[in-house]
Length: 143
Image 1 (cartoon, rainbow, N blue to C red):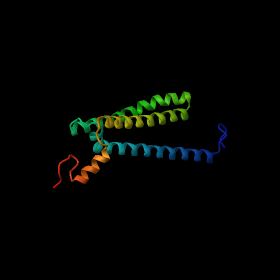
Image 2: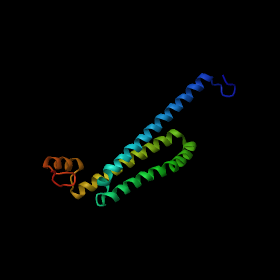
Image 3: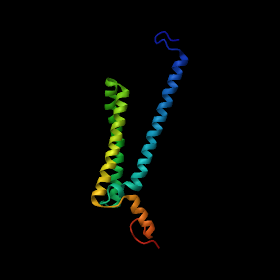
Image 4: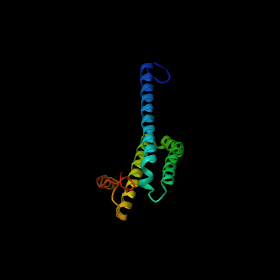
């Protein structure tokens, strides 16, 4: 038992292992999220969110949103870390989870609202109808 903290060496080792495991798991989930977003940015987002742009430009714009995430991450970490020390880490964790969920919901809601207002079919229905009619993704007939 250490005299200064009153915690046994076994309990301290167990706590350290728990922190290392939780940190590794959180980092793996975060990088998996970046992998999924990067794949979607390369394959889908240019057509889904930027249909009026040239496909190449739409892909660059989709990747620029990806880059903003990499730049904002350490800045957000510093800001949230500061308030986490003052208000409590659990409070800031809940606040960031709510902000992320709200941002995800609003981006999907804005896209769905824009599609329904323009009278366009949803992505899944247009893909299904193009497959049924024998046309490709760009509407041209397959050979």
